[in-house]
Image (cartoon, rainbow, N blue to C red; front, top):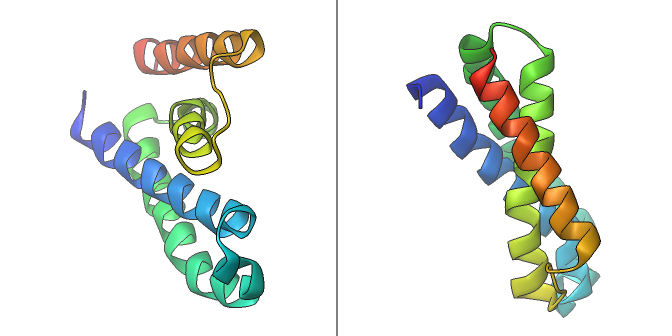
Length: 115
């Protein structure tokens, strides 16, 4: 894996994690439910910076704008299931989720293989 793609991947994973917590922590953490505005204000800039710089590195690797978009979307199918399972007790291993994961993995492969 190219350094640009590795850096982009790490930044996208961090950005997706921050975004997930800013949106979903209200459902399992009482403090977050009562402080949604504070969470929004404190997580918006870090998550935006992760995606902005992640796109910078992903664009260097892919040399176009569409591939990073597909890559970010597909990468979320690797990040989000773990967070939903760990923090909210939602199962990942349903037919719909597994098929979505397989399709997302295929998109990641295509974007990395045929840049």
